Amino acid sequence: MASPLMRLRDREWYSPASNELAHPGDRFIPTRCLMNLDFARSSLTERRRREPAAIDSPVILTPKDEYRRRVEENMRLDSEGKPRRMLVFRGSPRNSKPSVLLVDEMMKDQQARLRPIDRIRHVPKSADRILDGTALLDDYYLNLMDWGKNNILAVALGRSVYLWNATNNSVQLLLTAADEDDHPTSIAWSMDAKTVAVGFARSRVEIWDAIELQQVRILEGHSARVGSLSWNQNVLTSGSHDASIINHDVRSSHHLASRLRAHSEEVCGLKWSGGGNLLASGGNDNLVHVWESSKMGSSKYLHRYSDHCAAVRALAWCPFRSSTLASGGGTADQCIKIWNTQTGKCTDSINTSAQVCALEWNRHEKEILSAHGYSQNQLSLWAYPSMTKIADLTGHTARVLHLSQSPDGCTVASAAADETIRFWKVFEHQPRRGSSKLDDEDRLFSFNRTHIR
Image (cartoon, rainbow, N blue to C red; front, top):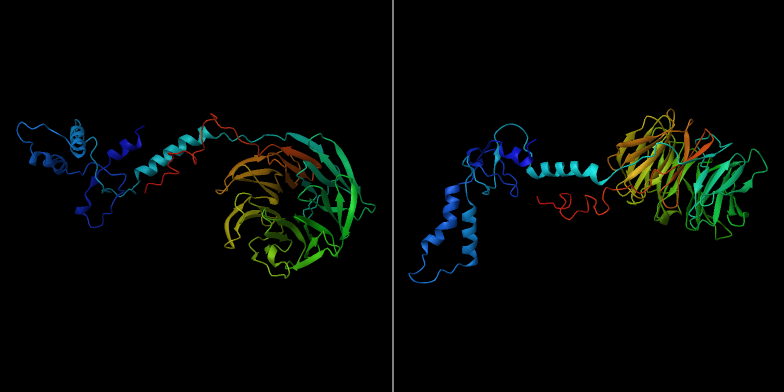
């Protein structure tokens, strides 16, 4: 196959002086067929001919003269009468085909070569580990699993909450509700992983010491089940079936710091941003609200998104772009939407053809993982920002309701209505061919870094 250089040489070109509609070409990627070689050659040599050295005087060449001499030596025509190194700086193709700049062709060729060589994306075909999750409730609106920074997975199974230590595989029973109707409905580890918050069907929230396995306090304020929880330092935010959001300051005896009302139905999704300045809430009213931490004293939200057409439970803040939020809709919606919270706009929307139950961003690569129900019950890995699907992870036989990520960001746990918890090493650091190779974004002479136009 001819190289881009050869393909460009074979095209017909004409001078823009002969056509009023001609446009100037890329001045850094010139063509050579239009060069006035006689004039160029004359310009390079005329000065030397006009200033002959005096007889018997030594010939002393200045640097400019030496440069001209070397250029002249290299100005030779090939067998077809075409110059080897002379360039012109304007030109337009005669035919109607769109003009393709040489640098663009070379960039495409370079990227096509580097992509399969520099990065090998391995996606696990099966789960690395499977645990029994007997009595896990099949309820889309609850949040029953969270993986703390202490590498302990907390999961609610029926009336009980268990702590599974991923380091030594030990299991501890944290609590069991006395009343079968007052079962746990949400779980969230504190940011220091010393305590775990548990929401219940009868509207209360309990704070438990994860080391002593003792209840610390009870937080009241809601009038219906608490299906979502999210921590921001010493503030625990809870969302309820009563459509309200409460910020609890756990340091204060009067814990109720503020109450937010904007949803008209159950608040089933809550997520604080990594910086703690923004809170996202999703509800059964198909709405997503974004709140500012500095304005929690009122129910005035920063943004209100109404693009989903089903309940929004899946929410995830981008770890490498703090203003980017991902949300996923239920069965009647099936979409993953990407929001820019600085502009308030939806930057992308992908129809997954399945209920979106949970979302997790990859902390090591620009990817996002989604959990689905109805009908394949799969996990799907997406490249960001193109949102092209990389792979599906299958194994669950019922809808995948919960996702949670390990502290090192390499493993994702998925809990499903099939009463299993599966662990996928889907976010592990991906190997490269040749440890000395750099990513094409980091190459010193990469076309992605060297913007010459």
